[in-house]
Image 1: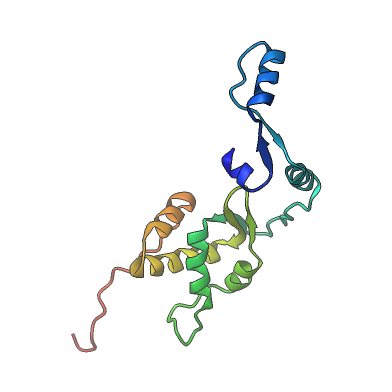
Image 2: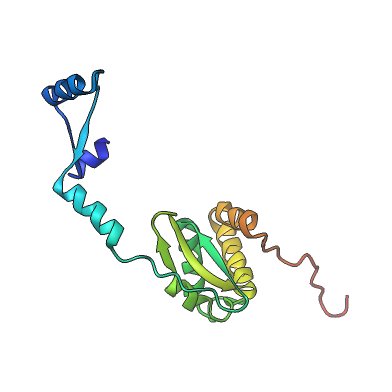
Length: 160
């Protein structure tokens, strides 16, 4: 409640108002609050304001919800060019990342990705895990069942 009051969206009732409310209710009222004009307008706007337009997934696409830290890592990955990476992001992944919607209620970025793009995201998160934190890749693996593991093969020199 204090955060709403600090934001100017609600005001707490004083002692006199709480005493009147206690008499009216027939029981002690320990706290009471009411919306300010700004608080009322925020609720009205929320109810009638623009909704997040969520397009339907295309053929072969899956709704992927990324946490902000995951999205940050994926943005770094798709920003690298073929000059920087040996294994570039999947075709169309950069466009999907740019078109992603942020759902504030969920606290997630929403993307519609193909299986190949999801595997590419797993690779980007693996790169992030190798250089920073593996938490993002681990969470993606738990939620979507896709974990990037480098091939476990031994490269041999010619003649061996």
